[in-house]
Image (cartoon, rainbow, N blue to C red; front, side, top):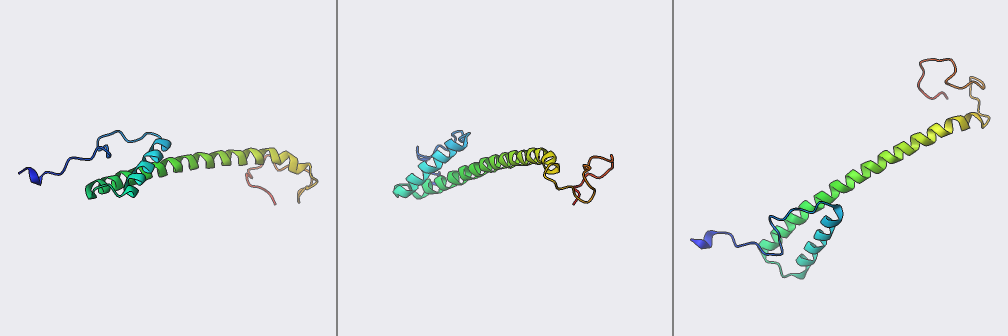
Length: 117
């Protein structure tokens, strides 16, 4: 019987549509989904489909944000390394000679890679 088949999907829910490829497109689609759900006009089946799509889009957005966050953290680490490298010669000019006198830690050709205190 045809009554046992699921109802056709609503045009508001593109089931086979390609998911958004950018954060901005995914975020815009989430906003559309929220407006549709807030309207109260979605059927129960459409609501379930919209919630599932919204969840997938939110996960995509979270992955994108995490990737950007990781890239920013890497940039901050690079910036920190650059500052530390620039700061080494400046530290020897501030008058802080440390326990070994005015010689720099690189003098002595030793195997110490740490920072002397």
